[in-house]
Image (cartoon, rainbow, N blue to C red; front, side, top):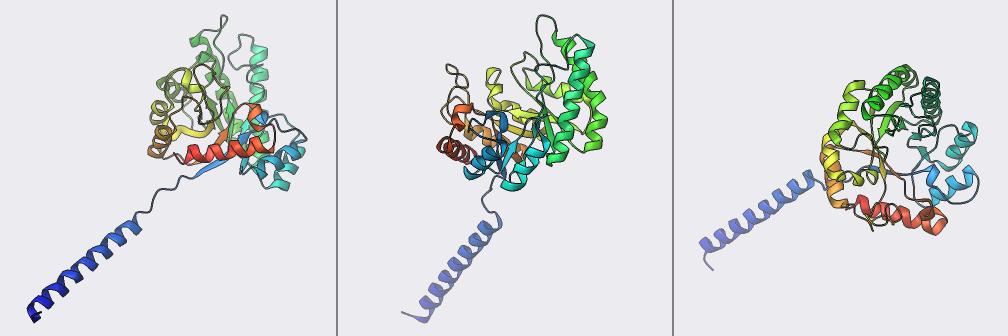
Length: 293
């Protein structure tokens, strides 16, 4: 082999090594995205038998990082269970918003509804949760959509000072209450309150009655404070295991990525999917697979 050929071969190999190194550097500079979803479970759905502490221990063992207590529980009991297990309070769910809706025609009931939300905010403050889940109202034969909108906005405005004092946000949830059935209506509601202390608790399963979760997420965007993870199937409704229903998890996760959502993802699967240690573990693993979609 001549010196010229050797030189050209050396230069060719050198350029190849340099190109490979450059590609390696670029790949290192752009690591694969890791979703920062924190896995929790709604306390009211835990069917595992026992005390608050025993349920929390089972949840922790199954691989959950957090729990969503209901409001009006025994605060000391919840605090002790959180401390002993290391679980975090992902959120607090107001336990009075169905029996005493903010949209009720009776002023006395609406006052009790406000008091229920206030107690939820105070519970959340003690537990270290950053938001409370609130159903804003119910449309029925006695309450029109317009009535529900006006009354619930007016009542929540009166609760905002408590939210400010506690440092806890109010997260409105989409449910089957015949109110807010389109993502634009959700943003209209938030715009009417016009407060940084109010955002959205987006329920992925509930919304399938009205539309696709991946179509709501871009509209709500940064206003999503927390997620409820729940499966839904047209024929079985919520009586279906996670990943075995109609949710398109890859599309949902992609939409959450694009919206920049990071934070708590809280299971609200039916209780029988958490009735024992094996069921809790299965639910936890199914959530992991959904998040990795």
